[in-house]
Length: 120
Image (cartoon, rainbow, N blue to C red; front, side):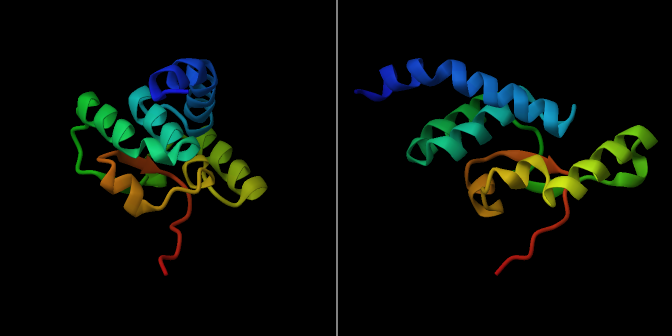
């Protein structure tokens, strides 16, 4: 099966995963960025396709993972994030299992709200 047909067949599941990631992460994650993260996670061999999609989306910030400042959040959002982290130990972005290096090389700018991971 060629790549174009494969992408077309996988489009509904990627859209569902993308919307689910956006809902779990919160309003700071744009659709093109979430879509590229899902593509990198579920089809690593399509790295250059996700990189091109990120380039076309035109991220304004420098690529990489930045961590959110919790002091500027509302109380309900802090409680939501705390509950998530207590249950799962990592943020939705960290659950994808993508390294910060891969995200940066793909040209994505992601604001994560989880605990910083230790780099080895």
